[in-house]
Length: 270
Length: 75
Ligand SMILES: [Zn+2]
Ligand SMILES: [Zn+2]
Image (cartoon, rainbow over the protein chains, first blue to last red):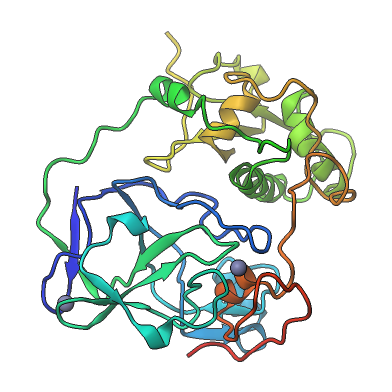
């Protein structure tokens, strides 16, 4: 567990938090006028692997080559060239005040488009950006250049086993009451679909009948050619039987652990 | 080659948790607007989510989804 403090005066800025992977839906924008929940679980933080916040550069200024080097292959209006933020739940923040002139550009809350909107209460340094406007997952993004890690306050929590995780996740519904996919389920499926497409390298893929085909099949059919010798896709992971080597798929769809961000693999054959 | 899927969704596809008592059809791409499991609402271009993600200034009331004039990138 770590506590983040102000790099200027050393004041405590967060409760003790343990590092986890950034949720896949961190950058999701959902609906309009919809207030989304808090992104991060209590007592956790994540380091965003992508830059966020200002300075921004328009797509026309960035150019295709530089964007591709950043892993952005489809045009966007503008790319952030900001820092890689430390993301926590708003409830973990201590000792900050809003910067009134940085709170513009919102309708239901703050969207962070003006840059850092939270200052250290003690010394006034801009330290973080609170985001809680509609359509956005609520979070506070600490500026890594304005905060520092204070001495650890106890060991990090143990990594939850897959079996325990399965029990914990049982109550995370993939659907809203209306029957529509939940925002996080749609984000998870969308991210996996993008990676499936990349893994296909544009060649035909074959997904197993059932829920995998129901979830991804139609989009893959629409986006990839059909043809002989498709790459095979199958679920693989810690809770499933190990396939015989000759039956191993070309592309394994594996679970990503929310704590570590690592994927689960099969247990070693007995 | 491996492709990762968020654990909670993966566990449902793997049959570890119940998914839904009715068949699920994929959410993309052709008839996304009307099939019953499409995301309820797509982000309106120029909505606040877009502006935040793209560093655009200006203020938009979420009650109004009318045209949004794009501001200059924030500084
Ligand atoms: Zn300070
Ligand atoms: Zn709003």
